[in-house]
Length: 265
Image (cartoon, rainbow, N blue to C red):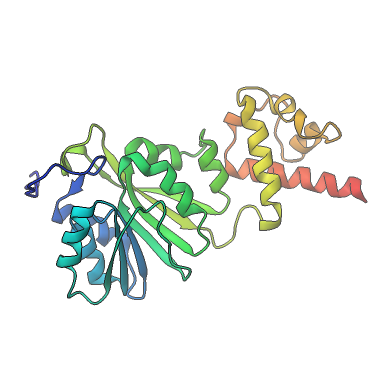
């Protein structure tokens, strides 16, 4: 049975698609919020997710850019002690410095920009975000072809959760959505001291992602033994950037680092 669409008197703000109460409750239930969590909700909209989050989390910082929806949220939650409404742009508001979880039905138009901002926040330890189905698939692919996903994957795990068909939203979007879960790794695949080397490796490799790495990585440094590093991690010289996942890139960055250290001695 399709949920009854929520009533509204004005068009939804651009890029926002609202969920019904039952779907919102199921999304929040699956997120397994803890009673001590501080949750930053992105795009609180009409407060349907906000209400469900507030039942479980210790504190909720609900961010909403649209001024009309923001005023309605303030009135709706003025007597709810653990909810604070922040009327502003989620791409600009100050996020907490203490550990927090992000949550939200993300306006599709800001998905990439928001992901970049959240993943750069050292105080965030998890996010559960409703995004386009295709974005969720790209971020959780076993061998992502997205440079963005590979750049973050050594420090974050990505999982695809509940699928949300377009008919569950109002107004109905042109594509289906899914919950994308981002969880900080307890033990990174790349140590912090090697972050710059790993990111440089990706950047150079993806300039010509379809070429053999022995060719694509040549600009890094003519003295580096690219072939030797590939052999060390049991990869052939014809392997391409698009053939590798995060674990292979992390191993290659480590192998190149060991060879640099050996030459320095």
